[in-house]
Length: 138
Image 1 (cartoon, rainbow, N blue to C red):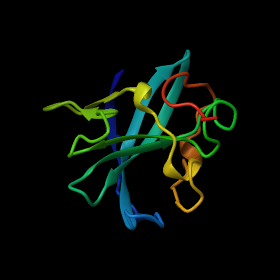
Image 2: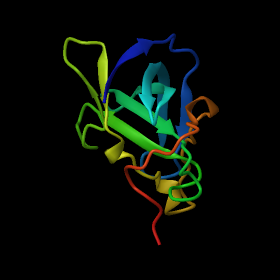
Image 3: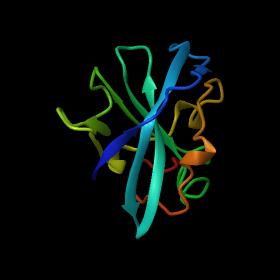
């Protein structure tokens, strides 16, 4: 689905020490995505990646969290390096962002406790299920 990115004041940086090879990663609030899913109006905050040449980061929880997917939520990520399948894709010359929940994945901390992962902020908790993307592993 494609939706406009409503810009936001960047505010204070969100700094995460991953405890892994990535070290410290810094994000800033980029804006909000508003869309309808499952018949409900939804709004998610998108963060801009300060390092690695930029990109967008969207951590979210939904009604599948802790049941079918990782309890802390899942991620959508789009980097300039195009390493994550363009889960969030900026449309050239447009304020629109294409969201593809099929690329939603569990954070590294779902697989190894040595990782520190940013959890989805409360504002990114969806009350409905997102039945797409990576599920829990067994």
